[in-house]
Image 1 (spheres, rainbow, N blue to C red):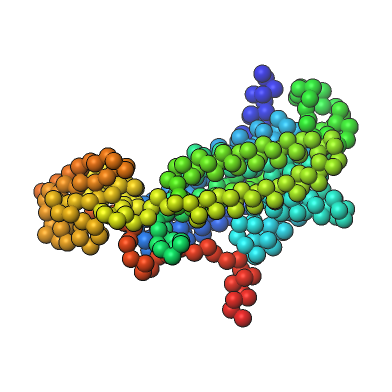
Image 2: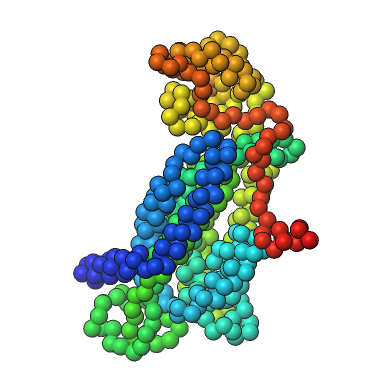
Length: 403
C-alpha cells in the first residue's frame, strides 16, 4: 500500500513540473487557436458564443489533467519504458501526415508507420512494443475523455446529404495531456527502491532484474472531432468512446504480446493505423448513410439548438422538439414564428412534439419588455443555406487545387 501511495505522490509532483514547463504554455496556445476557430464558427451560426474561449480552455485543461493522471498510472503499472528520441520520429511523421489530411496527425498513424519502417529497414531504432503501448494508452485515455467530455463543445451545423440540407452537430474538443513515462537509465538494484509485483514490468526486452527507472513528464495533446447526424450527440459520444476503448484494449494486448513474441510487433504496427482508420470510416458511413434525425419535418419546425438566456431556452425548448403551433397559430416555417413574435407578446404558449407521439405545451411570459425572439436555431426546409459544412481538405490537397 505504501508503494502505491509513493507512486501517486511521484506522479503528482512530476505532473506539476510538466505543467510549469514552458512547452505546456505552447500547448495551451494551440488550444486557444483551435477554440478561437470554433468560437468564430459558433458566432456565425448562432450569433453568440455559448461559452467564452477562456472557459473552454480551463475546462479542457482540468479534464486533460485527469486524463493525464489516469494515463500515467496505467503506463507505470504496465512498466512501459521509452526513449525520448522515439517520439521525435513519430511527431515529425505526424506533422507530415497532417499535410495530407488533418486527422492523420493522430499517433495511431504515425506510431504504426514509423514502427513498420523500423521493423522492415532497421531505422529508426525504436522500441516498437513500447511505442504501440503508449499509443494504446493515449487512445484509452482519449476514450475516457470523449465519454465524459466529448460533447461539451458541440456546434450546430447544416450538411448537404442525398441532395438535401439536414442539421447535425459538429463536436470538437481538445485536451492537453501531461503524463508520466518510465525512462530506463542504468543498472541499479531496484530492490532498494519500490517493491513492484512479480509480473512487473510487462514490457521486458532485456534483463529487467537490476535496472533503474526514472519518471519523466511528457506533454501530449488529444483532440476529438466528430459529427452527429443520424444520432443524438450523447448517443454518438457513447458509441465513439466504446469503439475507441475496444480498439485501445486490443492494441494494448498486441503490444504486450509483441514484447515477448517478435511477429506480433508487425501485427501491432499494422493494426494501429488500419483499425483506427476503419473506425473512422465506419463511423462516417453510419452518419452520412443513416437516416438523419435532424431532417426538416413535413409539418412544424424542428429545433436544432437553443441559445442560452433567450425565451426558448428558459421555457424548456430543446434539440429535437418540433413546434407546430404558437399562440394557437399553426407554424410550418421559422418565418411564421417570427411573424407571431413581431407584435412582441408578453405571453406565449407553444405546442410541440417531444418525440414521435408526445404532444406538449410550454408557456413563457415577460410582462416587462415582451418577447421578440425565442433564440432557437431551426432546420430550414429550403436547400439554400449559408452555413453548409463540408469536410476540410489537407494542406497539400488545397495547394494542388490552387494550381
